[in-house]
Length: 282
Ligand code: GUN
Image 1 (cartoon, rainbow, N blue to C red):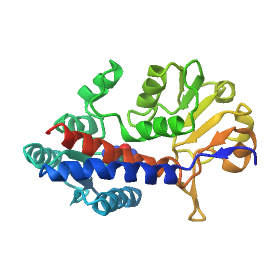
Image 2 (tube, rainbow, N blue to C red; image 1 turned 135 degrees about the vertical axis):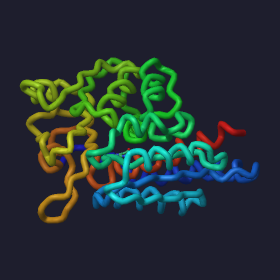
Image 3 (cartoon, helix red, strand yellow; image 1 turned 90 degrees about the horizontal axis):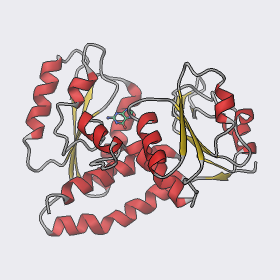
């Protein structure tokens, strides 16, 4: 194996330690950063993510509440709950875990969250603010990826960056952030012809498709930085990324593992966004 391993778990721990001072300062002013997560339905992966977010907040002495609603909750009931939380002066972050059940319109739900409490950065006005270069909240996963690249002193300016996956949660904001830092960015999607021709040109390759091990070593430029956003549970019960680690790590210059790569960074950036939201009240 030649690639350096980008340890997201270690970086997340370091960022958490650095946040202690900001949390203490807020508490000295009588403010405890507070997040409420709404989980609709019983998707097992979502339940794991929500518990993980909750535990991290509690460990750091922040307020965290999880509201669990049944899968058949009506859209109006969910919207009313969000409207109620929007009014809570002691709440700094509201997060509706995705995906939502099919009968609920995701965009309507997200756009009902007060944009000043939308710590996911998914509200249309926050997506627009990011696009026009003045973000209010940066979506947690791409924000975490940028911190990982920064921690490795990777040159983004002038780099060829390829993002595989064009979701609103990861791919699109990821591309905007890389572009803002001066990369030449290509966004690939499931219809891209000859995906490997694109990925082989990437100095920085970010893969967020939800398709286990779809990017293999032969699709990677020697020495490239490979960021694997995927978390997939294999038939053997083990977690696998969207990148085939065994072959990719022979070719890449640096690579994120799964687990222990991007996952812990997503959670820590949610802390950062919630603390920032609380600090805006100072
Ligand atoms: N589902 C998968 N990732 C995310 C995320 O970052 N935020 C929310 N709300 N749901 C998700």
